[in-house]
Amino acid sequence: MKNTLLKLITICIIFTASCKNDDDDNTNPIDQLPPATMTGKQTIGCLVNGEPFTDSGIMNNFYQFVDGEYFLAINWDMNSQNNSQFGQIGFYKTEITEGQTYILNINSHLADEFTEGGAATYAINNVELSGQYETNENYTGTIHFTRFDTENFIMSGTFEFQAQEIISGETITITDGRFDLKFTN
Image 1 (cartoon, rainbow, N blue to C red):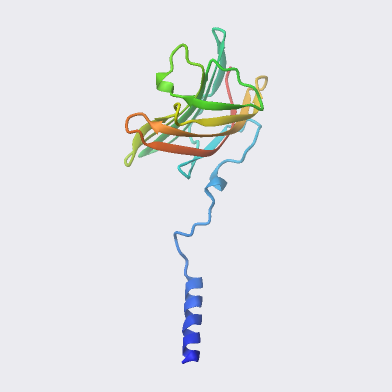
Image 2 (image 1 turned 135 degrees about the horizontal axis):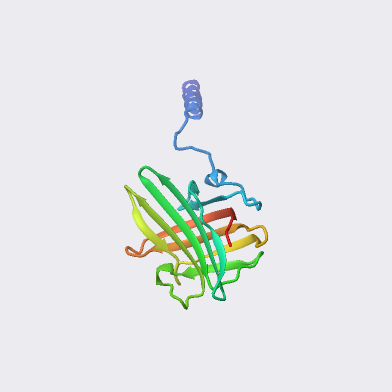
């Protein structure tokens, strides 16, 4: 009886070890993001609720001095046949300095000519989900500029934020964001 039980346990162990579970994908989502560089490679990526997102579109990023104030925009998007996702980080009336971390806590659709500070937006439009998520005083984030070179027009750094859908109130979490972008002046 002991011998039969021992053989049965051994067979179960061998069978279990040889089975491949399709749910056991060992690919770390962070490893699917572009590397953190500071040379203007035109890359940006983040995790959206834990899922990797990397830009596949044309980025229009700028840092401009207008009417005595600085304005910055970082844009990223991913479009496929049935899926459109777009993100933006913007600063109003804020001079950016290399090595500094800035708070993202403004609701961009409520911003007006007197608004100062940073905002983040993330929009999704696909067959399963649609919405526009924005930072506000309760759902905030940060962006850190590891490089901000106004002579070579390169900005690099990291970001993360939580944002709230403007109609439903649902939230989205953006983590492990990294960017290495060129910008216009």
